[in-house]
Length: 185
Image 1: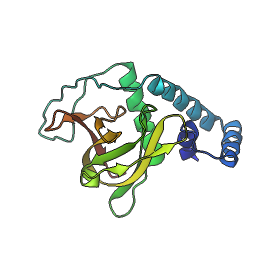
Image 2 (image 1 turned 60 degrees about the vertical axis):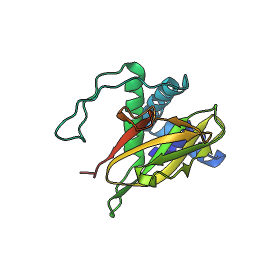
Image 3 (image 1 turned 45 degrees about the vertical axis):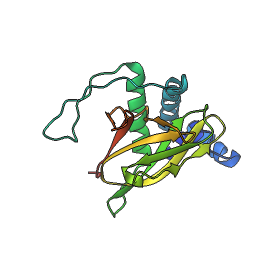
């Protein structure tokens, strides 16, 4: 049922599923509280389309999979918290060392969105519209480990994921988001 919160926010539920969602909210106080908190966070994220990301300074450590980030303000914190909560709702590890991961971006200003990354062998994978509010989504099976990716908007503009704070510059002057897929304990 936790996935329903995300699907409700992204307006992906049909009428019967919306009825089930509302009934669950009325019966389960914790579910209601989680739903309200995610809606508040979504309000922060969707209040303005992010066209530019803050510059990050990463310290190079002996263990490159443990970057240290400075606090980046309310928006970045809310975006990171949303990503963590959605990841915890949406993820579970499969026995073959992979995890399904749902990528969602809010870009009502584009007519096409794709994702490219190390997990797609840098080939564009299409995203589909999620409802009619400007969200794009896809769920991909991601191997355990560190992955670099970005979105391609309208087949020309690269766009780093605003909910993932760890990034690096690529060889062409763009940014890639860095996603760490870890095995569940």
